[in-house]
Length: 365
Image (cartoon, rainbow, N blue to C red; front, side):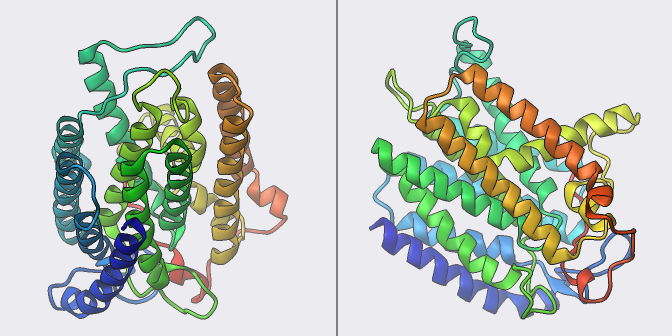
């Protein structure tokens, strides 16, 4: 049944994008170039809504507990609604936060899942949370996941591809551990994201993106990835399918992005929510990388991190070792981004018409 639900999610999302594109133009739900927006032409922002439509049908076909399905769809509905308003009218980060908090609370209350332990991160024994601390920390992690993918969504195909890799990892781990609900929902998410990427991947055959996911899409990716990883890392029983810290390898790129963006802005004395043009994809483009080359570099990095995560799980590395490797990998990644121009050996040049088609505005906090 899960594969049928995934197929239904795929085709529904695909059809929804085709149907919604002209409607988006009619209601002015489009992204126009200008300022930091360097894409080419007016692009409908319907990917997020279309994915949500596909997810609703796919999850509705799954034999999962109603409280899980209802909580997940309700949280996604809140984020899609806020995201669509933001995509149309550009809300401030503080205006969007109540919706993100509401989505996190709905997920926690509806599914009954929270982060109760982080494992033995420092070699001094497991870090466990009290009931109240568990609730607060879970809300924090879910909101962080939402904003991490929102920040990552600055280049065609990037956020969707990274999320797709995370869903595949979740499906693999859930299947090996016999966790049917995370497996089923991850397959539905794979179907919706694959349909969206048909319209959004920076392929040589396409001169421009056919649609953007917008905040409505990136926030749904963030909340679903965070929630599913919480599900598999905090599953009942003494032996977890994967440790909490190990799950970060599969979302390392957005994690490094959001952590470094926050640190960078604080060092500069500006708000952590003030958008800038110093994200990873910006650095590669300024170094002279073409859009497709920059996309390939970032997705290759995401794939490398995921492979390391699988190896850490396979060889059962300690939580402390995983954390040290994650920290070292993050420092190396940030250093490479800042050294990209020197390593690439190219002077900074403005993107040509073709290269500019896939670079999006970075309005995320």
